[in-house]
Length: 157
Image 1 (cartoon, rainbow, N blue to C red):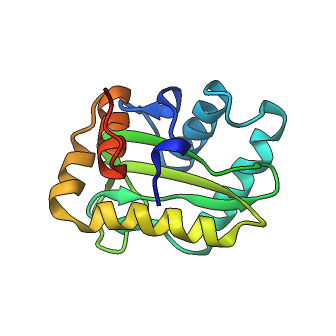
Image 2: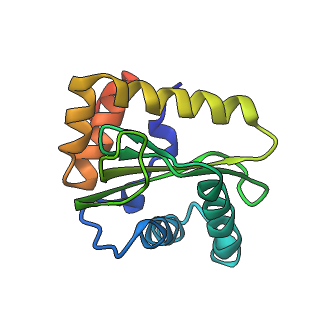
Image 3: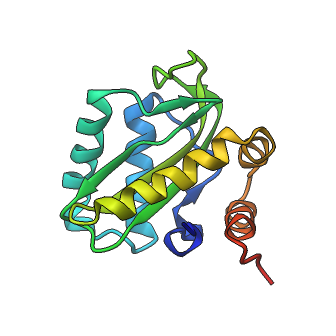
């Protein structure tokens, strides 16, 4: 599944300064509002949904990557945000490693198949050591957008 249609440069925060996991998620939700892919009046509800999902089980999938996500009635299409935390943040990851790369995904509640396909596409990147290293190396919105576009087969011109 191509991810680039769901990524916006203003929702890419390559230098997050956070106090904890919840703060990182809060800032990424704010970036989605700034990018105008999430309406401000529903941002608090979406944040609550993501934090509730995070409370069920860690989304720190290993290799320094976390994928906080939720299915929500407050979005009409998939929206994504990307963040980097140089010092890492504790997500309670399965491998015990601090999360330095966060890919947040919010999908419409009624589109479970699309949600699962997007999650699979993200996990595929993370499980490939070379692509995961490249993901960790994204230090600008442009570099993240270029990588996702390249992986989708639609590199930037």
